[in-house]
Image (cartoon, rainbow, N blue to C red; front, side, top):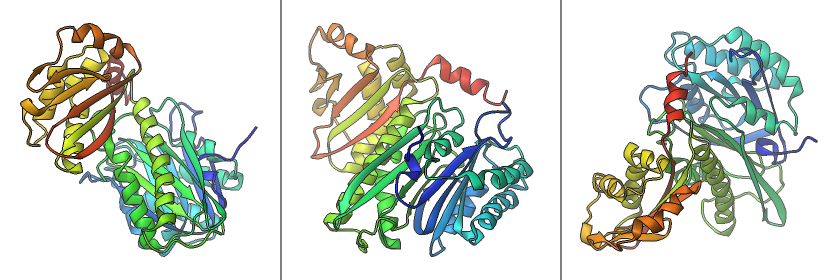
Length: 401
């Protein structure tokens, strides 16, 4: 039975996915369209990589439009570092705009996949022509499938809340399993809501939700050329307009959007290429939240920490080493480190002689928590990562073949 889910969970959105021939296997979906039935305000954040895909350049410009009504995504080819890239991106937007009866500047474009190979644009255009009549309110799952590359599973989430007595819905989908270390891997995320928002509000909402979710994950430390996170809000719920980024209604919406984004971010890490462990890194006792996040990401990105997680080795020295080169001021005499809730290091030395026997079973579990208190202040942050395995090497060694 088809259900409204993901980007079509909220009212007024249609979506779908199909195979158009970008992916070489001849069957996997590789083209998605998301359409708002009415004009929507939109904002997005994009990769900070200086080598960017033409879809990123195009979609950044789309944010200047008063509203947007569609998103078109192809997977299997990132359309990056090709001389025809921008022209092909524009052709994708033009094909959707023509079917939707909107301007080209009202169509966000995203591309993900192999870098440096020409996009088979004629196949994409034929796919758009075929897919557009098939998009529906039940097409959220199909769109989520069509944006996948090395992902093993779809990433979908939704939530509801009440604003002014009206039910407001939020839904989203994401893709990503490798090249993940967003700085706003190959990461794409799209969230739709039927809340009524002004441009300044959706801009603030997008940036804050991203900072608390996608900007706190890492699989391999690589920031893609094509990272993109976009939110659309079409007001179809009939709920009162939120016209400032503050107050109870805004805070409740921000909480729901952030929750959706955090779930999608966690799913990206859990689906990390070859991953067998999901690790939560909690840093407390920092002088600032920024410093806490900096330490957490330093630990989360460490290949030595990540391989130790895979080997189920409670190598606390690697964890403290990674914290130490984060660039944040700290003193070993003030640190307290816990692995799986067990204190292993405190105040400059081992906390107990039997630590390894007690901690070892914790590292056999699929979910691992590492907590580090810096003993310097009251700020904290949480980031998420996975282990680094033989399969990660195999997947990326064979990526183009």
